[in-house]
Amino acid sequence: MIIYLSLLSVFTMLVMGMDKHNARNRKSRIPEKSLFLLAVLGGSVGLLAGMYVFRHKTRKPGFKYGIPAIILIQIGVGLFISSSL
Image (cartoon, rainbow, N blue to C red; front, side):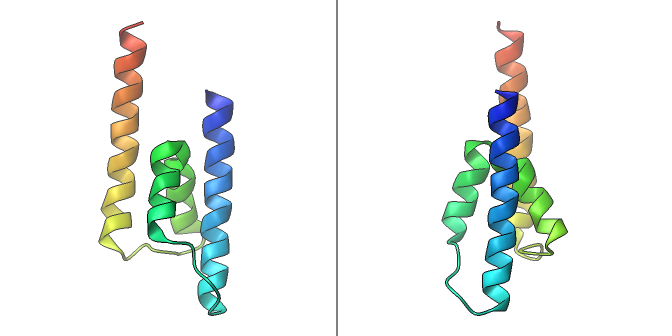
């Protein structure tokens, strides 16, 4: 599970970098729904890191508050699952 989350986080961070690059060059963008889907699937830490490394989507309330909320929910679910094992 750690390997999955790590790889997905790195991939998601790279996707954020690509989207920022595309935004600067007025090219085709990655839909926000896709970015949120990557976060929900486990790439939330990478997305949050990408937001600040690339200074991308940091002003959008959905990302500014939504991604940390997703991370907290994922931590809560992880703690619940590990305590019930």
